[in-house]
Length: 102
Image (cartoon, rainbow, N blue to C red; front, side):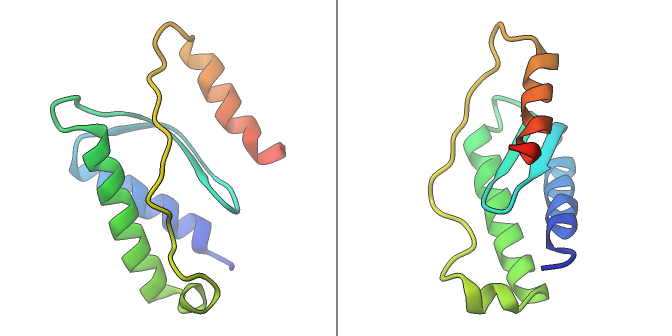
């Protein structure tokens, strides 16, 4: 599965850039992704997630055919979104960064 995580990061960065969303922190794990992103509320985070999942699924499955054989779908329909509210941004970034060591 060499290169899949790096390609996924590129795709996420491209989609975010196209829609003026700023990636604050990103970690790709074997079975999920942690993404801390600033997104225009008028655009809608739900739209950004849909675009991220759609493009990454299509491109990764084209570029890495092994993903078609191993998985029925690349992503599930579910996702978790939360606002950081009063939490310090540094604490959220630290949490995401340390998930790769859990």
